[in-house]
Length: 293
Image (cartoon, rainbow, N blue to C red; front, side):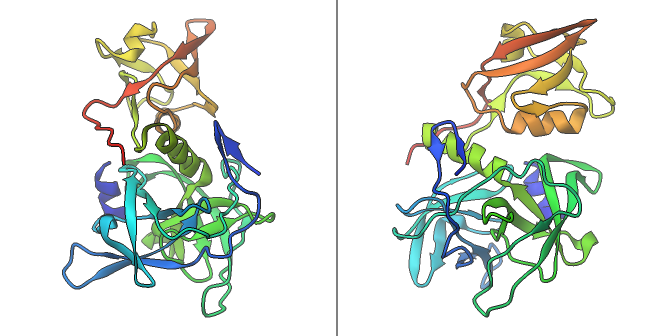
């Protein structure tokens, strides 16, 4: 079941900027040892810069600290526990991809793929967006994509300009030949976070929302939380978090995913009849450790 919901757990962003030409190496495979003895998990490597930084997806059960490709070991730098996006350090010299936002993709949109090593060209089309799986809330809103042949995790999906707009996750059994995919926006959020802290960490606001409510209504506020410090009140309705519009519980969870600890962000709320804008600094999620490599 989507790995048990991940165990519950030229484009630029901030100071991060990436070259604007398609990769010549995307599609190269890496293997991770599995928690099942004698088994391996396959994934594709997406080069982020020419200095050996790569992105892939390390599914639950994959030992991402022991990845190998063409006999070379790749160093684990960080992994996002929510999306399973994994950052690795490997050989230098690969031509990096260009990333572009995937947030405006909609059902029916076609996506491009680089030919596989055997020359096969996979065709892909967006099904839509999914915030839940088996009636359980996902940690962010994923794309659902149909393919002529299912790619492995880490496979980059491109727009008509050759920019990577999403990276395939794992198969969705209910769709036949389909996978979940994380939008490039999530990849870039994590790259920006890593650039600052040498980790991928998530934020805490201390707001309590109820999944059963049809709007993003603040049911409660934790004491000693950023929400309390910056003046949120019970009964506030979230309208926007950063660049993300909020209309319900799922869209609020997705917007919270993109917050970066200790980085100022603007909230738009409805309090009674008044729309208010609040500038907030989220805290590091309690219990998170920031390790520098």
